[in-house]
Length: 189
Figure 1 (cartoon, helix red, strand yellow):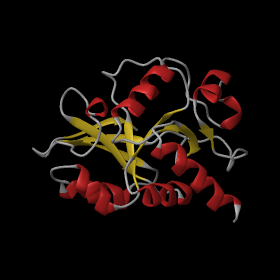
Figure 2 (tube, helix red, strand yellow; figure 1 turned 45 degrees about the vertical axis):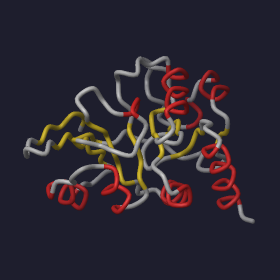
Figure 3 (cartoon, rainbow, N blue to C red; figure 1 turned 90 degrees about the horizontal axis):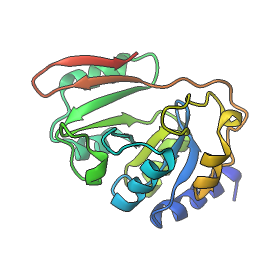
Figure 4 (cartoon, rainbow, N blue to C red; figure 1 turned 120 degrees about the vertical axis):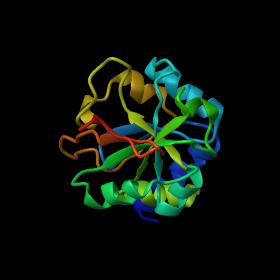
Protein backbone atom coordinates (compact mmCIF):
# COMPACT_ATOMS: atom_id res chain seq x y z
CA UNK A 1 0.00 0.00 0.00
CA UNK A 2 1.46 3.38 -0.96
CA UNK A 3 1.64 6.40 1.37
CA UNK A 4 -1.32 8.14 -0.29
CA UNK A 5 -3.61 5.13 0.13
CA UNK A 6 -2.44 4.57 3.71
CA UNK A 7 -3.11 8.22 4.60
CA UNK A 8 -6.65 7.99 3.17
CA UNK A 9 -7.25 4.78 5.18
CA UNK A 10 -5.95 6.35 8.41
CA UNK A 11 -8.12 9.44 7.93
CA UNK A 12 -11.23 7.40 7.18
CA UNK A 13 -10.79 5.46 10.42
CA UNK A 14 -10.58 8.68 12.47
CA UNK A 15 -13.46 10.40 10.62
CA UNK A 16 -15.75 7.38 10.96
CA UNK A 17 -15.14 7.40 14.73
CA UNK A 18 -15.97 11.10 15.15
CA UNK A 19 -12.35 12.22 15.48
CA UNK A 20 -10.44 15.22 14.13
CA UNK A 21 -7.82 15.19 11.38
CA UNK A 22 -5.24 17.80 10.40
CA UNK A 23 -4.89 17.64 6.65
CA UNK A 24 -3.58 19.52 3.59
CA UNK A 25 -6.37 21.06 1.53
CA UNK A 26 -6.48 22.92 -1.78
CA UNK A 27 -5.80 26.07 0.30
CA UNK A 28 -4.27 26.03 3.81
CA UNK A 29 -3.79 23.13 6.25
CA UNK A 30 -7.17 22.36 7.74
CA UNK A 31 -8.75 20.80 10.78
CA UNK A 32 -11.39 18.40 9.56
CA UNK A 33 -14.13 16.13 10.80
CA UNK A 34 -17.34 14.46 9.62
CA UNK A 35 -19.58 17.40 8.68
CA UNK A 36 -22.67 15.33 9.55
CA UNK A 37 -21.54 14.53 13.12
CA UNK A 38 -22.64 17.20 15.64
CA UNK A 39 -20.23 16.00 18.37
CA UNK A 40 -17.26 16.00 15.97
CA UNK A 41 -18.12 19.54 14.80
CA UNK A 42 -18.32 20.60 18.48
CA UNK A 43 -14.76 19.26 19.01
CA UNK A 44 -13.53 21.54 16.20
CA UNK A 45 -15.12 24.63 17.79
CA UNK A 46 -13.63 23.65 21.15
CA UNK A 47 -10.11 23.07 19.75
CA UNK A 48 -10.13 26.38 17.89
CA UNK A 49 -11.62 28.16 20.93
CA UNK A 50 -14.14 29.58 18.50
CA UNK A 51 -17.78 30.43 19.20
CA UNK A 52 -20.11 28.17 17.26
CA UNK A 53 -21.91 31.23 15.97
CA UNK A 54 -18.98 31.60 13.52
CA UNK A 55 -19.77 28.96 10.92
CA UNK A 56 -17.15 26.64 9.43
CA UNK A 57 -16.46 25.70 5.80
CA UNK A 58 -17.51 22.32 4.47
CA UNK A 59 -15.64 20.52 1.67
CA UNK A 60 -17.32 18.22 -0.84
CA UNK A 61 -15.62 15.93 -3.33
CA UNK A 62 -17.81 16.55 -6.36
CA UNK A 63 -20.75 18.49 -7.82
CA UNK A 64 -23.28 15.74 -6.99
CA UNK A 65 -22.40 15.91 -3.28
CA UNK A 66 -22.79 19.70 -3.40
CA UNK A 67 -26.25 19.34 -4.93
CA UNK A 68 -27.30 16.97 -2.11
CA UNK A 69 -26.32 19.54 0.55
CA UNK A 70 -28.30 22.56 -0.60
CA UNK A 71 -31.89 23.16 -1.59
CA UNK A 72 -30.81 24.83 -4.84
CA UNK A 73 -27.41 25.55 -6.39
CA UNK A 74 -27.85 28.89 -8.18
CA UNK A 75 -26.71 28.92 -11.84
CA UNK A 76 -24.25 31.68 -10.88
CA UNK A 77 -22.42 29.24 -8.59
CA UNK A 78 -21.45 27.00 -11.52
CA UNK A 79 -20.16 30.05 -13.44
CA UNK A 80 -18.12 31.24 -10.46
CA UNK A 81 -16.57 27.80 -9.96
CA UNK A 82 -15.74 27.49 -13.67
CA UNK A 83 -14.16 30.96 -13.87
CA UNK A 84 -12.40 31.17 -10.49
CA UNK A 85 -8.62 31.42 -10.67
CA UNK A 86 -8.17 30.13 -7.10
CA UNK A 87 -10.17 27.87 -4.77
CA UNK A 88 -13.50 29.53 -4.07
CA UNK A 89 -15.88 28.80 -1.24
CA UNK A 90 -19.52 29.68 -1.84
CA UNK A 91 -22.04 30.39 0.91
CA UNK A 92 -25.40 28.80 0.01
CA UNK A 93 -28.91 29.29 1.38
CA UNK A 94 -30.91 26.42 2.86
CA UNK A 95 -28.30 23.72 3.51
CA UNK A 96 -29.33 20.22 4.51
CA UNK A 97 -27.78 16.90 5.49
CA UNK A 98 -25.05 18.33 7.75
CA UNK A 99 -24.70 18.78 11.50
CA UNK A 100 -26.99 21.58 12.75
CA UNK A 101 -24.08 23.33 14.53
CA UNK A 102 -22.31 23.71 11.18
CA UNK A 103 -25.10 25.87 9.76
CA UNK A 104 -24.94 29.65 10.31
CA UNK A 105 -27.70 31.52 12.15
CA UNK A 106 -29.03 32.85 8.81
CA UNK A 107 -29.51 29.24 7.56
CA UNK A 108 -26.51 29.28 5.22
CA UNK A 109 -23.48 27.03 4.79
CA UNK A 110 -20.08 27.74 3.21
CA UNK A 111 -19.18 24.90 0.83
CA UNK A 112 -16.22 24.37 -1.49
CA UNK A 113 -15.81 21.63 -4.07
CA UNK A 114 -12.27 20.48 -3.30
CA UNK A 115 -9.78 20.69 -6.15
CA UNK A 116 -6.90 19.01 -4.30
CA UNK A 117 -6.35 15.33 -5.24
CA UNK A 118 -5.94 14.14 -1.65
CA UNK A 119 -9.11 15.94 -0.47
CA UNK A 120 -11.21 14.66 -3.35
CA UNK A 121 -10.10 11.04 -2.82
CA UNK A 122 -10.66 11.30 0.92
CA UNK A 123 -14.12 12.89 0.69
CA UNK A 124 -15.27 10.55 -2.08
CA UNK A 125 -14.04 7.50 -0.11
CA UNK A 126 -15.78 8.83 3.04
CA UNK A 127 -18.96 9.52 1.00
CA UNK A 128 -19.80 12.51 3.22
CA UNK A 129 -18.72 16.16 3.41
CA UNK A 130 -15.80 17.08 5.65
CA UNK A 131 -15.33 20.22 7.72
CA UNK A 132 -12.40 22.38 6.69
CA UNK A 133 -11.26 25.19 8.92
CA UNK A 134 -7.80 26.73 9.16
CA UNK A 135 -5.40 25.06 11.58
CA UNK A 136 -5.21 27.87 14.12
CA UNK A 137 -6.79 29.05 17.36
CA UNK A 138 -9.53 31.66 16.74
CA UNK A 139 -8.05 35.15 16.45
CA UNK A 140 -4.51 33.93 15.64
CA UNK A 141 -3.01 34.17 12.14
CA UNK A 142 -3.75 31.37 9.69
CA UNK A 143 -0.62 29.20 9.26
CA UNK A 144 0.78 29.62 5.75
CA UNK A 145 2.43 26.19 5.90
CA UNK A 146 2.68 23.07 8.09
CA UNK A 147 5.66 24.42 10.06
CA UNK A 148 3.58 27.34 11.40
CA UNK A 149 0.90 25.14 13.01
CA UNK A 150 1.01 25.47 16.81
CA UNK A 151 1.55 22.52 19.20
CA UNK A 152 -1.95 23.12 20.64
CA UNK A 153 -3.51 22.27 17.28
CA UNK A 154 -1.10 19.42 16.52
CA UNK A 155 -1.85 17.77 19.90
CA UNK A 156 -5.58 18.56 19.72
CA UNK A 157 -6.36 16.43 16.66
CA UNK A 158 -6.57 12.64 16.49
CA UNK A 159 -4.52 12.27 13.31
CA UNK A 160 -2.06 14.39 11.32
CA UNK A 161 -1.72 13.56 7.63
CA UNK A 162 1.86 12.86 6.62
CA UNK A 163 1.73 14.36 3.11
CA UNK A 164 2.62 17.76 1.61
CA UNK A 165 4.28 18.99 4.81
CA UNK A 166 6.95 20.85 2.87
CA UNK A 167 4.52 22.66 0.59
CA UNK A 168 5.04 26.42 0.26
CA UNK A 169 2.91 29.22 1.57
CA UNK A 170 -0.75 28.52 0.95
CA UNK A 171 -3.54 31.07 0.65
CA UNK A 172 -7.09 31.01 1.94
CA UNK A 173 -9.97 30.57 -0.48
CA UNK A 174 -12.13 33.36 -1.78
CA UNK A 175 -15.56 33.38 -0.12
CA UNK A 176 -18.65 34.48 -2.03
CA UNK A 177 -22.18 34.50 -0.64
CA UNK A 178 -24.88 33.60 -3.18
CA UNK A 179 -28.44 34.08 -2.02
CA UNK A 180 -31.35 32.33 -3.69
CA UNK A 181 -32.77 35.77 -4.54
CA UNK A 182 -29.78 36.36 -6.84
CA UNK A 183 -27.75 38.57 -4.47
CA UNK A 184 -23.97 38.07 -4.75
CA UNK A 185 -21.66 39.34 -2.00
CA UNK A 186 -17.86 38.91 -1.86
CA UNK A 187 -16.93 38.13 1.76
CA UNK A 188 -13.20 37.42 1.23
CA UNK A 189 -11.23 37.92 -1.99
